[in-house]
Length: 195
Image (cartoon, rainbow, N blue to C red; front, side, top):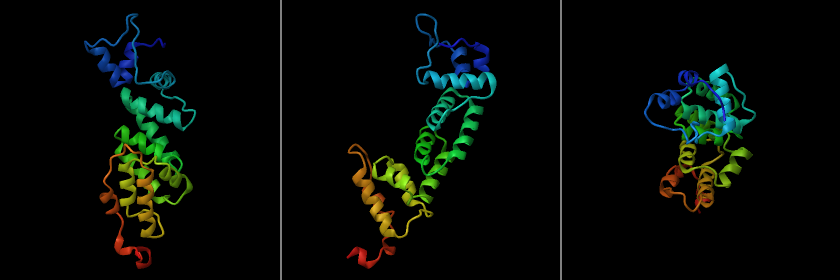
């Protein structure tokens, strides 16, 4: 539980501004306001930001949580700073998680940058492991495979990547295999490979 000033929250967060100015009651029987979408440590970091203009993200997971919460709570300056930090940390090992966060929060620019990193480092061990483990969602797989900057030695590798993705995809995944195979530039596949 946190004791905070209503006016400070209203000034720092569009979520709290709307919540406190509406007739909607979001308190429990004790009069305590509940923000169910946000974990307590993450909420504490967001409150630190509102009060001091700074907060600490101990690791990448904490940064993802703070970014998501700041977006949910409408703390736009914190969202901007967090996205900037995510860009600084963008690498083959963080790109998938960054893409997931950006995609779920409608940060199209950041999602596109993360997808580019995955395309440019497609051969890296980190990206390949995520691919083979079935952790890459269809929309991202499609975006990576359709990228003209996809870093592969040959179209045969693209074909194998499609097959590997389909094999690793969860049973519940909805996708169009013809659409994925359509991303393979078969004209560039060697005759020996097709034989």
